[in-house]
Image (cartoon, rainbow, N blue to C red; front, side):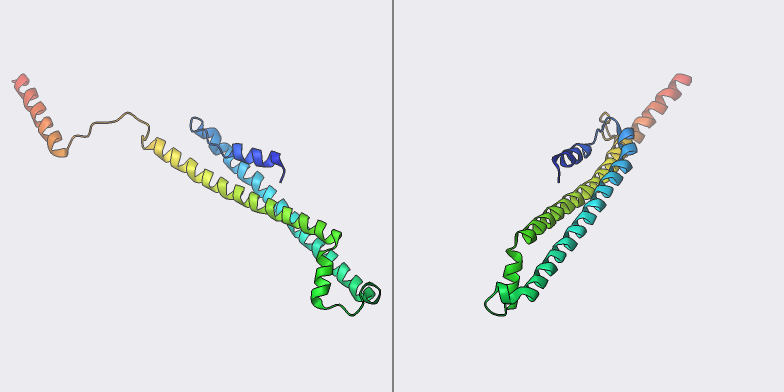
Length: 161
């Protein structure tokens, strides 16, 4: 995976809690962007797997057709396998598959992280609505509140008469 994509998703995951409206607006676009990257990575991985299988089949066919000139006797299954995996063409395709799998796994993690980002945005909005960052309020017990109210009402009545 190239460094640019990795750097971008790390910074794209950051949430600016002072600009929640913009964060909500860009969230679907960011999720879709990384979902497309993930789908492309899966496609690349599947192609790399197919290419590796083709090389493996080609080398196996070569052994089958040329065993008399390449080997002193009919090669066993284990010897065929060792021959195939020791070939540079096979190693190159295997490296491509390993890198493609890494990219798929990393982008799957990025997609999951954007799901968590969405949940974090929901929680931040909920906390703002419920006054999480507001000034502390002094809570008065219901009994005290009714007692204060009665005293105030009594004072009002006395001033009217």
